Image (cartoon, rainbow, N blue to C red; front, top):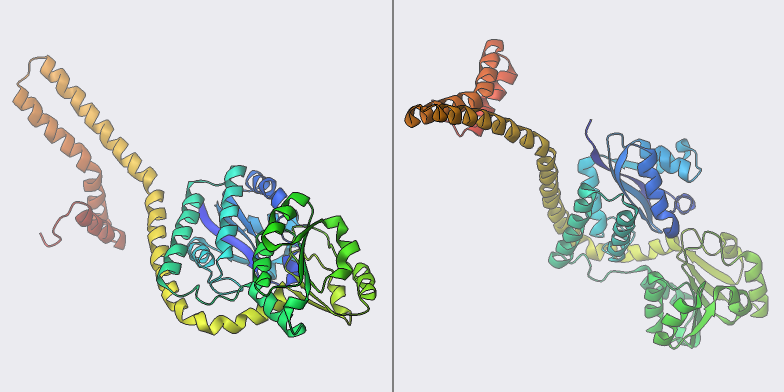
Length: 422
């Protein structure tokens, strides 16, 4: 059985945050995981997208179902516990799915553009791991083109409510004015930079960035007139900040309930607004049970960002139409690629016949035979050889008188541009 494209994974619609954070592939381990997947299972190509909202495996395999068992084993989760939350999409649906994901139609925030950058990161990781084959690479490159087409020809990206904008809006419900508050950003990645940009527009009283490496924090700090800190300094300074936004790649919580209790006491119970955009979570969920803490995780923000969804729904129909056309185009390319070995075999068969007849003609000419007769015999012999197989198949089909024979007749009419009524 030939390899087929597939997509397997879970996202914010199919699985709760508690499960999504258990199946995250850490960036530093992603290439190793890809190599293990291709080495251990019958998967010839593979790429993994792992974000706060989704973990998906895209691949080519004759046995796509094995990817679920591998994912469960890799994350040490029983396959039966994982299976109810996982979707497994065969080739046609997988192509449609990746185009929808790239175009922002499958995102928690409809039309958000961040997923495109995350998909490009996944492609780079797969390429570095040596698991990005021709078919999968073509699929992703085509998906990027589809996403550009959707954004250029629809209003899917108009008035997008991002997670960052949603965080600012929620903070405005807690504090009457953000320009009086001090903000601590934990992490220095793309999401933190985006959040900082949105909050900076509200002119907060002070801003700080805390990160595992000081260099990354120092790179962001000047843009926002901010302070740069090391992650280990967070317990000492936490009480100073009214708003905390965290999004790191840490596999363990950075802020626990005990640390937050000490900070609240030092603040004399002045409220703190906290946003945890990380998966796995940076802030222990128990922190949210404290009286003076307003903690929101990524799923909480989803409710807010859905408020703007209706404004963008009209663009979805247009986007889906563009995607459907491009799905057909890509599947046509795949079918053509699947026929390449057959075409090559057909041409090789014709070449063998040509060489055999040419050698016979050259020998006849060397004997001094009449060139005209040699050429006439060459053309007749070559024609007979090339038409022998289809003629024999047609005669066999006529004798059997079945539907396959009719189908073969129609195919010959089409292949040789014949008139069926002759």
